[in-house]
Image 1 (cartoon, rainbow, N blue to C red):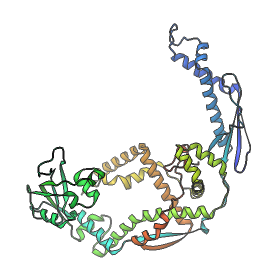
Image 2 (cartoon, one colour):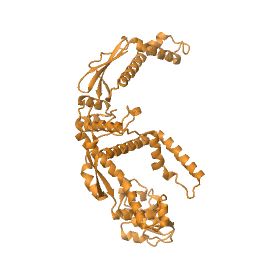
Image 3 (cartoon, rainbow, N blue to C red):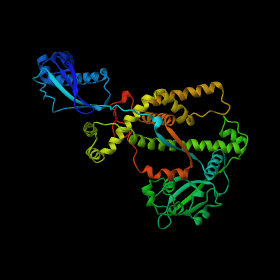
Image 4 (cartoon, helix red, strand yellow):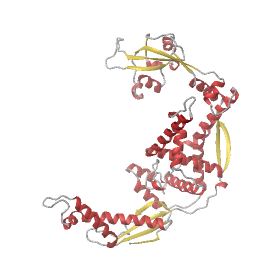
Length: 484
């Protein structure tokens, strides 16, 4: 086995792998013997088929497979041993690779074009960025507090329907004669009275009680298509075409009475904070909202900053190779055409992947299994394993044990874990950029933020790779495959 390299252009090399008979013959013999043990041919006992027949039937295919495997293993070993930082993956150079005859030849030569990562200088401390800190308006804060009071309120069952109540009942679709429509809607459902847009229909429901009936047109009552779809238990495209009258028979009424703004509520909402008055409660609620907005702000910060870094940090790329590689990894003819039509944008995506990798290496940015497990335990699962009132230490230990067990099992859910990995990687990259760049903080409310960023969000941000070394041959969530 001999592997060598020579320069083949800017940032590309030609790697030649020479495979000799002694390199693959032992593996071929082993596989043919294994195949012989499994063969069953009339006239011969199982496992006793003559080796000449085995070779005639499977020899060429086994030989080709063994050679290709040995060639591939040694190619990547050479790359690793020589610490070649590749872009994409090696591409066969058909022009320089002699035609192989696996049936007659003993020695084989394979040539590959390999692209290398560019070397460049990067000083984040010289780069500037704007970070938006989104604060809620008083109206948003008031609504958040009102929703919180409602969430921790009491559920009552009044005798008659009021404007803020929920009516549970049975909905029956009617025909033109006001009779039950054959094959029509006949379901149990829930109606939120305050969602009724037409006053004349709302008035029909007010003060009604259990077992009363109301006939109305749902399409006129609920103008929001998603609400109408939910009420009718239909898909939105079906709900959009629904025009029938319906009869609603009330089975029960529920009313949510909001909790009072007092110390009892403060302790329920913020168990770990000693909040004694409404002013402190509003401040805590404001911080909650700002934390919720922070993800939007961070997403925009990373999007915008990546675009600026791609513009400002200059280095060459092996463009001809990258176009070949992108085309070779495309999943469809449409994808190949997209690469041709938007190659400059693909190059921007590649530039960002290279810059991002350098940022990650310099900042030791890594996402481990424990990071993902911790995210599941602290962010995703707690609502499914809530702490009970007056929980004992034993109960707490048992609950946390279940939480840890479920979180670890969720690592096997490949797609979800990959999404969490991507999110955590983005978060760490964002934090690294904040710490190392000249960042100007600009305080805005949500409306101002939307107005500020709307023009920029029309442009698609550079494609980004998210993969660990063990996933280097997989594609990321984007259309563009991983470079590393």
